[in-house]
Amino acid sequence: MLINEFFYSLQGEGRLAGTPSVFIRLAGCPLRCRWCDTAYARDFAAGTDESAQTLLTRAAEYPTRHLVVTGGEPMVQPGLKEFLSVFAEAGYLITLETAGLRFIADLPLTLASISPKLSTTSPDTPEADRLNLDAIRQLIALYPYQLKFVVDRPHDLNEIADCIERLGTVDPERVYLMPQAARRDEYIEKSRWLADFCLQTGFAFSPRLHVMLYDGQRGR
Image (cartoon, rainbow, N blue to C red; front, side, top):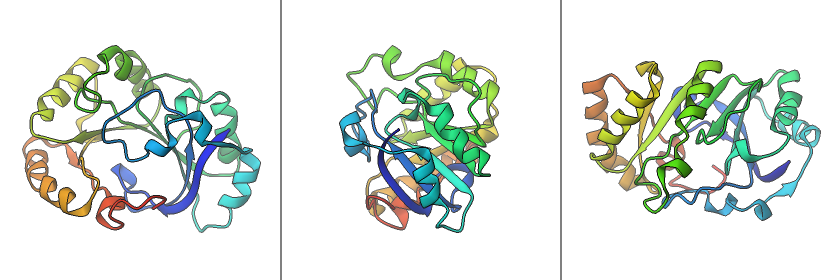
């Protein structure tokens, strides 16, 4: 598996925010989101081939059984199921972070953390290349899931509502909205109006602890 980063930190977003977790960042992503905070992992050449067993040995050094596999885009990596199975058999609770571009069945997931990409993330990318509604429907039907939307401006909220409506049967309690921000001051400013919207709609406000606590430092 092509690995870009391995580190130990707190899960920063969504339902498990604040949970100490081992992170494995895979290399390679077909998207070019304009505010991607891990652009250094986009290319497959940014990864080093490492075995799951080697990484399992490293993960055992930390006091957690939570594993977050992120990217890049993990769903484009061949051998993903076999890779994750090594950790599942060792008792790890696995969160997979994905844009939902592809569907893979029978992954040993505790949580599919799906981040559909809005038009503002890649204005020049056709919707068909950034938003695979069929794949997302299959993922939320098969796996415990959360939908995380990055919100840059109030106008994005209309597009989020449209996406949820098109998906069909989405549990609103599994929808998390989080402010787009690379630095702490921007995060705080956007959090105020986004929190108000969450109170109005019942959607959850997701913190972004890696921004709030570490001001966007890599590997945190």
